[in-house]
View 1 (cartoon, rainbow, N blue to C red):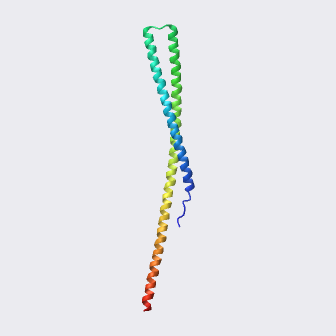
View 2 (cartoon, rainbow, N blue to C red):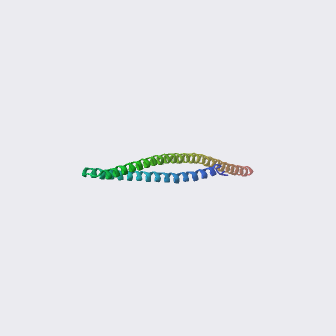
View 3 (cartoon, rainbow, N blue to C red):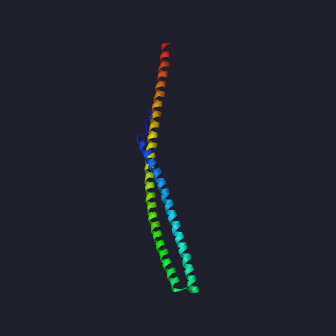
Length: 152
């Protein structure tokens, strides 16, 4: 008597899509964290190199060494800026991935709610049907007993 939930294939498809979105979001988060780690390493390296440059300048260095230190600091600054932009882009991709995941999760929740309502309706129908059978059986037994007692 129970009718299967007609949207079950959509629930299954939505679950697959949610699983994919979950996996993709995990990858995006890992990439963003790796980007942050690289940025922190570059910033740390830049700070250490700048400290060495200042120490060398205090102790007196030649013009060639000064130019080399300065040029290298410029290259490190450029690398830091490139990495900072990469982290920002990664953050945007992670936010988009999180939004995608949320949409799939909400859709699955909505389908699940519909399925729960369907199951509750089916349970009520089965209970009514069973009660009707019990009532009919009781009425028949009552009629049969009355027929037997009126025959005496």
